[in-house]
Length: 387
Image 1: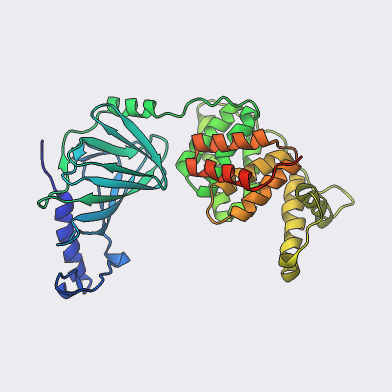
Image 2: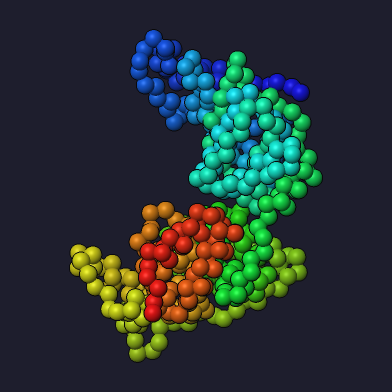
């Protein structure tokens, strides 16, 4: 057993950084002055997790040190896929709060906890444990670590690959028993949600699984084309670039993925606006109007002519698939609850059943995050079922 309080050493370096940045000692926390202390963004140093205590690529971003009255420090720790800590314990315990991805933490008795963005695990003092990312995706958590007699961590041996894989297997998502969605429809759900969040590592795995499930290259391409109207060009372009790399890698392995149908266009004799207005009315259930579009008529014009017109006329994905893609993407985005609720209604209007939408939530919970799954569940509660 070896005590290596490298965080304490880093805090000494952090104080030196304050001095370098022009902060006098009086600017730092002083017990005799009842003032608040700002730790500026450019003073929040980041360092690589030492190889002696971590397996894989890990970075630590210090947020604040402990002081004379608050005997705890805070840091963001980011683990790339498969990375984890060595076995260790904390003399005064530690809180771990996931801010991105899914974390795994295990103890000597073989118990493993998987927790996601927004969830917290408290590790009591003197408990041997480890924590890290899943093999598929990166993870960041905020750690608030207590100190006792100047010590905040006691490092031990590294976690073996065998022990890590046992933990991964113990928390692997169970195979979903879903009858209402085809395998292709199920595959579109994580592809759409991960395009929205920009998690390209997980998106790569989702696209590979989608092709294996029977999606064509053009169906996944069209998902990216469709989603640019909802998640923006940057996310959609990153998604398209990810698909290109996946297809090229599979081709190099001798896998011949079906290309699929070519895109269509606006029917002859109709303008994009005319075609789109018809599609919009079908999806919403009635002609669209209201104060927002009175205030900005251009918004509805672009919705009708481009989104519901040019994009929907391309085909490849039918209206049900496009609404499934949209619901999955919106469920994995912040601040779009009204739009998600609206598209739950549109999904129903184009024939997706309540059971199918409930199963979308199950797929999101299993393959993206519980938070995304809950978003769809809550939207279903908020939007009355169609008779």
